[in-house]
Image 1 (cartoon, rainbow, N blue to C red):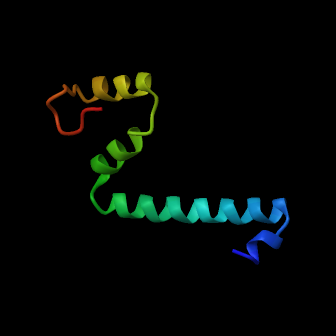
Image 2: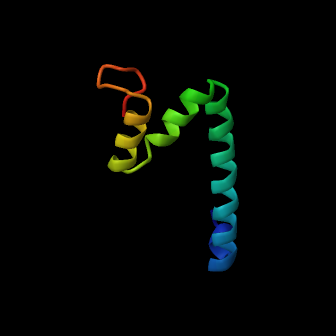
Length: 69
């Protein structure tokens, strides 16, 4: 990490953003391999509680359902 410590904050921020984008792209691709419904549910796990309620209502999900959030 010695070299990374020599970078300016702007350079570090750019590198961080590129890493984030690649990791998200990789994660999204891996989840998409499982199917659209699985991908959507995994993405919705990061949503706020109100959005999760809307998701559950949209699909008429109950606590015993596999994709319930």
